[in-house]
Amino acid sequence: MNNEALIQDLKPQLEILEPAAAMALLTERFPGKVVFSTSLGQEDQVITDIIFRNHLPVRVFTLDTGRLFQETYELMDATRAKYNQTLETYFPNTQRVEALVQEKGFNSFYYSVENRKECCFIRKIEPLKRALTGAEIWITGLRAEQSENRSDMPVLEWDNGNQVLKYNPLIHWTYDQVLAYLSEYRVPDNPLHRKGFISIGCASCTRAIEPGEHPRAGRWWWEESKKECGLHSA
Image (cartoon, rainbow, N blue to C red; front, top):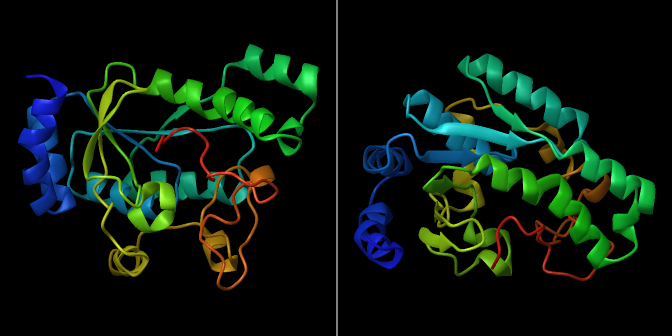
């Protein structure tokens, strides 16, 4: 079955199922080939809880860029402890990071969008491609409300850049639904969220937002761009 036929077959089923049931269906159809990438954000913590609480056979991994907040590392440990599960961690290629820093310094990303995307590629996109090797289904924590780029994303789509089907179980969830879930199941989340950091990435590239600002306004705040690193192409 080709990718278009797979999407036509699976999408109607996934749209009517709750995330736990939908992910169970995918693991049955693609045994050993379903993975979830978590950045430890609130949406991702919801999905992590669903996977671990329901004992779903999904490989869970995260990307450590080397520039994360200390609070994010502490949340990683808290999540491991709560579920007694391992989060596979992928790091950037050491030689590529060393070459970037030697050529352009530690903070080259502040000086142009091109420099920032270069840093994102080395620290995030290339490790992601390694992490997705062998996967057929990539689960993400994307929500339509998060940005204009994500507003029309479907529940299931073909990710051409990574050659994998991407399942977005929370795409139609509201932020209030996310918060309600975290509270109901006592899921650990990042204390920075309560200090105005709604979308959290690298410490050097994230600031708190002001009341009324877009949730992703705090990402790469110094530039005018689509506020994406390239992991999720619109």
